[in-house]
Length: 258
Image (cartoon, rainbow, N blue to C red):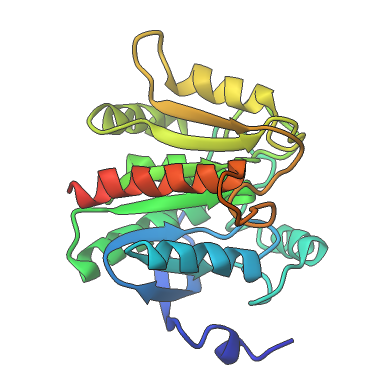
């Protein structure tokens, strides 16, 4: 495998340490690239591989600064089975099966968003969560530092498509925050078994009301899972490319308007 420094040589690397509400101390490296409105891009289960770095580069090329936390796994390659094993050793940070309670690492991510907002002197940041971290993005809307969120194929809690990892105490905050801005974005493939139609229905019932849309859903045709990374097709008119354009437009409207 390539040396980490070679893979990430175009990024600025720092370490960020923060406490959680559960009195745990969490520390991870973060990688930053670009300039402009800030997007915190949270890695998916396979890791920070070439497809995630391609997404980061696309965001940078469209006028954003990307902050990429390195939560687990090797840099520059994917390791689905290896990272799954790692997560079972990181129970202090990730609760794969918990319902109605967010993983502690979300507290660390919220602290990171506040830090990034302050350091970059912006009104707030955008976040993208994918797969394992998909609904982390929506949970982060409870924090004042987060202005926009994209949940791509949210997949926790594992093996339960009828619930979400969100603290009940945060749900009212999330609703109130979204009501002041614009619906958050949720993406999935229509035939994705990990993020099924049931999961989107549960999210709709949790946050939306008949006259109040707080989550805007985008379903792409066909079988796939990773909308913006592993299953992304960089071709004009392709559904994944159209989804990315929608995400970029959303972030520009929410972050640059601020």
